Length: 98
Image (cartoon, rainbow, N blue to C red):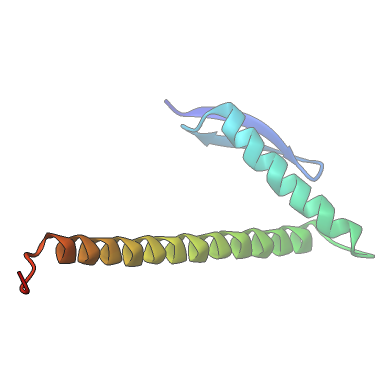
């Protein structure tokens, strides 16, 4: 069921329509707000649009890093699983020198 959730990001109010839980949407908004405020502290002058774009780039960078770590973790798990399977197969094969 689509509902409207009121949020505030960097002093601007927005109405978000969707099916997501209200607490989740508010957590997302709080994270974006925190990113924008953090960026604004390091800048002498910043427009809302500039802060929004920089926050989007930072958040996307974090997402890409997380995705890379996930892929590396999956590759590591696959490599370990193959090693274990090979080791098990070696142990299960009858000894030729018996």
